[in-house]
Image (cartoon, rainbow, N blue to C red; front, side):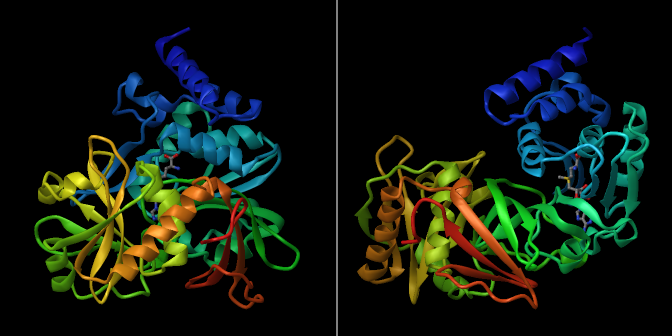
Length: 404
Ligand SMILES: C[S@@+](CC[C@H](N)C(=O)[O-])C[C@H]1O[C@@H](n2cnc3c(N)ncnc32)[C@H](O)[C@@H]1O
């Protein structure tokens, strides 16, 4: 066994142990496709570590990467591929996931993979040829439009984050087909597997947490992160349609901490990004994530935010003259709701009540969600939490508990 083979086998064993790889088919595919040939500039060790590897950066922004093997495995399990199926991937990147899918659908199936950048497609073609998957069809284009020439597909999968459900992706699916995509819902990115029903609605078969690079091109949507100052404080509204208070009000409120309400919970990065973050944003669409980056990341105020991959962030809800934020100390102890600026105690009490309701519901997160999507033109779903996207409405329900 050469060193790449050994590293690959260890990667698959670890992914199985962690429950990321569940099926024999995905284990065999990930145990066969040589990831290091898709990352020719990385060492074998890097290629088989459970990390995303950024492969293209422009002006400090990562535009392409080989996704983290855990995430690749989670999405392949969600996709549920079978021999003979026709698949469209949007976001070819290195070509690694396309090769895995080609292996899963076999010689009787087809994989078409689209990327928006010509240089990325050219490199993916080299990798796929070197790894023995020359039959994957690569297309340079804007995946927002899908690839109608090869439609219909049994599966359409995005490996890049979307803020909308484009009608093109749905139109290019066979009846009963599955669309899998990282979808932004009220500020949380969810990997959602959606099955197209005969009634034209799409219903989730599974939902997982994820963090993908954003779609570029026609479907990019608006920039969602707003700078509060030049020092590194940012706000990311959960619902871009809900305006935040003026930046000077927000920045001023940051420097004016007020009364605190203790909470009975301690929060992890996943809670801020996914579980509690989504719960709050579904109940309070004005929720935003307060982010401390660069210069602000090392400040005393940032130390009370939750550590997320070396950066700091927390959840906050605006009021007329400021906001309330959830803070906690590094050294342990439960989180608190803190007023900033001129906000009343009622807002703090409301947010504290929502956090307690989430904890009381056993801290539900993405895997506890069910989504029902009505594309534009289909009957609008009815329910407590209906989220409007540009081309569709999404009914979001918790499988375990109602939204507080
Ligand atoms: C996370 S990478 C995909 C990883 C890839 N599946 C792999 O196995 O290496 C996301 C890719 O989406 C591409 N992308 C971004 N916007 C796109 C668009 N509108 N259409 C097609 N591809 C796009 C980026 O260029 C990038 O290569």
